[in-house]
Image 1 (cartoon, rainbow over the protein chains, first blue to last red):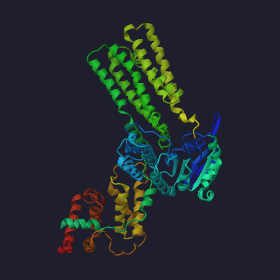
Image 2: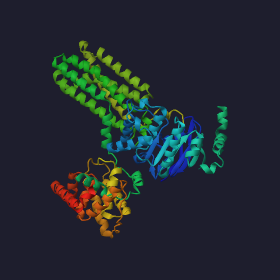
Image 3: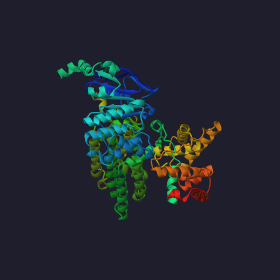
Image 4: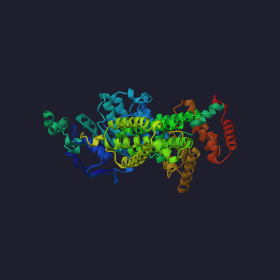
Length: 238
Length: 241
Length: 153
């Protein structure tokens, strides 16, 4: 199981959002850390086939990102997403399931399982418009797992979760990372420390740090210091 | 005693618990739904209003005919209403954008382009069927040739189509839908005011004829553009990362 | 299949264990059964009969027998979490079951432990529904006479 990103680039008229990024991802949890505007979302979108790169390629086990088989192995949770009006949690999952190629029967089963997993079973029949931000977030995580994906890409999944939910999420993720490639982005350093096996720090479209969390972090505070080292000036100037 | 026996039998064949069940189920590849299943599912997600509006129009025409209304008036009123079918179709097509579902849908196996094509197919079929029924029912009664009837009936519809598709292709974001709405209203009004049967002059007939062909050609061009182009959604131009 | 895969797994496993009396082997065969049931059938056909699932399992068990001698019966009592009475009943019942021919035992398993319908059992065995019912009733009366009345007190 290997996701290969080769010199991936996204260039706009006056800015390079992602600059010749090359990565090789295997099983485990990768934390993508970086300030807003560093290129995280653009990179993730290209890894999901949502954006056409200006250069480079993305392949999973040799399957190119544009192919249906790639999407079949993919689970994605965007930073912001909507829902069709009057959708219930269950209805939303069943709809997404139909897009991911699950049969109706299987969709109901799996949706129920996943609602249980993210603790939304008691609101399964409630409309999403009544949901809090954290509940919507959990629903987003649930939908990304419908097709049992081998690649899981989550854009700021912990934003809007309260501390208790965060812990549950960490546990969930550590289970998931066992036979999957999980990439999650965040700008919260502590999330990465606790969840990820490997940390990738992104700045100005490039990956400037790539390594095992415990190798990069020798004492508890180091990851934060490292982050501040790279981004500290910008934040001070902001 | 039978009951006890049957109860006991239930447990008489118990086996030691399976050890590799969770692992197996986790990695098990469930058989997938076919493209056909996906299409049928999409059919179910088309909003009711599309079906209802078509049915209502056909029903209204039937009622009007039954009461022997003036055929020219019926054709004129229909022609003026048809642009709103375009609006309905367009809003249905643009659902993913309107409700911010596009990003999620693009990452799925049956992605946004599949969904759009399915929607296009379904709406096209519904619209097409409605038009065929209306034509079948009205053209004979109207006494005009089939071609003349088609021009009278469908020119406003085609005009609305091409304006709307043009708007979808050229502009970005939610404004597109407002423009489509505006275009449909505009065409409808033009149809009511200019193309009405009360002051038809030979000149008008030719005008309509040209408008028909122009709209048809333009609609096809914009439709092809719409289907082929990849979805450059707003974020392509924004620089948020 | 109307039941979720999780439950079907347990049931097919029970059946395979009954045939093979070996847990590891039974699980292998169970997994193989499911793989074959769905294989070449990328698009699930609605309502493929349950009987078919068991037919696959049965054939796999037969193939397995041909390949090697099945490991000997463990002969141990299974743990049930019912009370002592149930355990005793179970032991007596299991002994009594042994007097029945294997195909009849199989039918009892499918009927009572795995909740198959008479129709499904009929399809699986190739017998008529009438014949299946007759076998079940016959088996029940044999069991009743083999076990004493007191066992059911």
